[in-house]
Length: 194
Image (cartoon, rainbow, N blue to C red; front, top):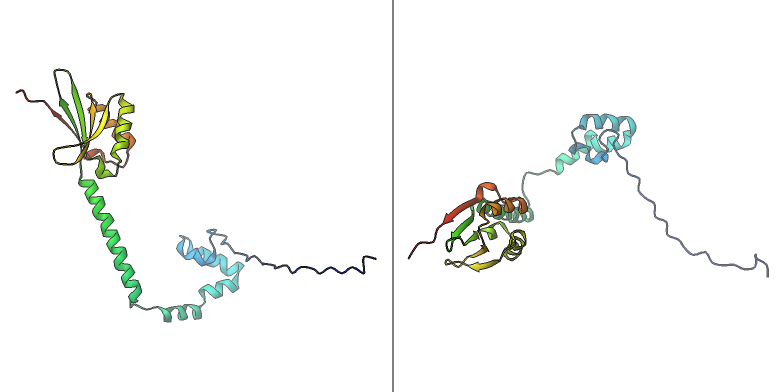
């Protein structure tokens, strides 16, 4: 048999044509997005010179008039519900930020015996800090015992063995930069004699 006698079917190949995107020579954005840049007038001039058909499509008077007809001042009901939901979420985030800015971290040094003392840290949980991880971090940083306990009001606080209040102030600012410096208070308590 010769090569001419053998007929093999050619498989169908799907060919996808890639769309060529034009980028502005002034702002390097696609021409549809030039209006969001700072150089709209220069971009229009460049587009008019290089791609007049695209310029006519985007900025011709008839296209602008048809777009103006489709505009409306009335809100659609679906968007109204979405807008209310977004407003509620924004208000919730704002309240959380205000609560966070109003809350304080209190570092208290409490004298136990003549030379023994402990340091209590209250209010870290208000800044979305995991107290167990923070206690472990304090224990490794200051080479001492540190644990999370409940205080008399039922709130969690961290108790660190030893007087590390000054170093702890700086360590909190270094470790968690989103905690404002004004929201950290240093307090010293002395054990009352019986």
